[in-house]
Image (cartoon, rainbow, N blue to C red):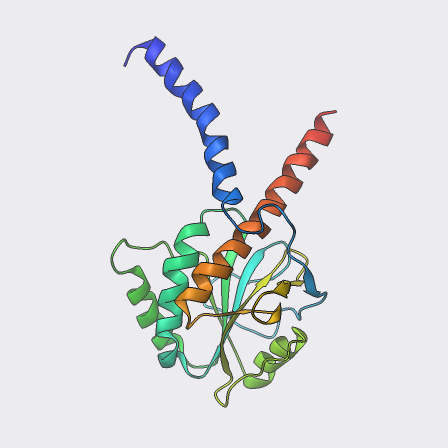
Length: 219
């Protein structure tokens, strides 16, 4: 490749990439509007253990789920979320998945991870599986302060968007439910039509905040 062609290639990338990023985020229904804060303080995860590094809600954009003791019933939810949300957004900084389970399911989690890697070999680095007792799971779930409930196995089909300040984000003007606290991972339509859009919105919010911060530092 000639030096001139290399120059034009670099210039094209520099101009085109920001446009692509803008169109990616702007394709969401809410565009750059902020997601409302529905609950200001979600409990921390200090009562849970993990086989990897410690996990926190602070300073992360988190998709939080509750699988309790019924992981075998959640494989469909996991595959839906992996395909529609995780693969699309996991390369963004400070983005993570956190799933809370009852103790003793490490072997089942390993099997699920193998299923999630099938096909394109998904990088699961930002899938976090945390283990605790039912009391700890219920405490975090109740701190969300929603009208939803855990089932008899301590799980829920719903997943929730938690911002970097450990606040629950959602919709207060949803056309179907009025206030939308979480997303039903059993429903591909709900993930496609609502959750994808809302994850775009919160990622765009933080990208714009970072851009503004960097611009102010240069003044």
